[in-house]
Length: 306
Image 1 (tube, helix red, strand yellow):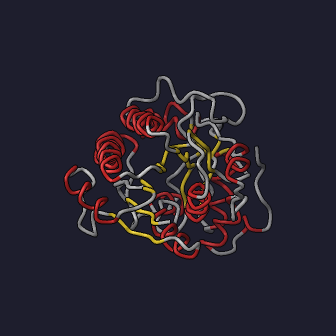
Image 2 (tube, rainbow, N blue to C red; image 1 turned 90 degrees about the vertical axis):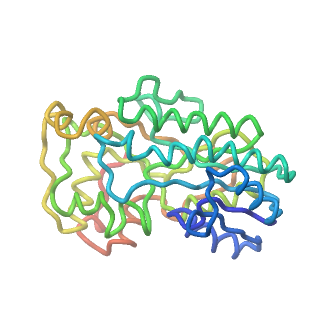
C-alpha cells in the first residue's frame, strides 16, 4: 500500500515511517519541513495527486516545545488550524485523487470527567476549561470530518517517547526534574499514556483494516497523577513533588492547568485492542519511561494502577 503521512517528521511520524516501511508499505512523507503547507489547499492537492496514495494518515500538529497552560488557546492556534483546515484540505485532495482511506489523530484525554475509564461511547468534555475549549473544538471538528468520509480517528492518550514533552529534554520532564510540577488537591486526574511507537503500530494495524469511527489507543495501565508524578520524579532522581491546594494551582496555571491535574479521565483500550488485533509494546508507562529515562527507583516497584 502507498501511504501518504502528513506530519511525517513529528513525534508519531518519526516512529510511523520506519514501521510502515518495515511492514512493506511505500511511504510518502508530507510536512512543512519538506515544503508542503497543509493549510494551502492547492499545494495539498498537488502533493496528493503526485503521491498517488492508497491511504492518507494525518498526524500533523504544531505543538510548541514549551507548553504554558494559561496560554494554551493561543499556543495551539496553528495546531487547531491543522486539525480543521488541514483536515478539510486533505479530504478535498483525497476526493480529487480517489483516495478512500483516511486515518486521523484524536485525543483520549478529552473525555467528560467522570468515574471509571472512558470508552469510545463516552462524551467528550461538554464544558471544558476556557484555555482548552478551542483545542477541543478543533478535535471535535476533525473527528466529524473524518467520520463523514468513513475514516478512522485514533484517540491517543498522553503521548510520550522521543521528541515528546515527556522525553529526557521535554518540557514536562524538565518541570518534574526541577520540582516545579506539584500534585494539586488530591491528584485525582487519571492519565492514560501512549508511547509514540505504540501509536504508530496502531496506525499500521488500522491500515490493514476497513474499520471506521473512533478508537482509543492507550496503554494497559492508567494511573492517577498523584501516583505517577512521585514515581516519575524518583525515576529522574528529582525532588519529590509538592502538594498544593487545587485553588492555589488554579491561580498559578489557570483552569486548564488545574483540570489537567485534578479532572482528567482515563481511557479504556479494550475496543481498540479487539478491533485492530493490536497490543501496545509498552503495556505500562513504567516500561516505556524506564526504557527512555533509564533505571531509577520507579523501575523496581510500579505505582498503583487504576
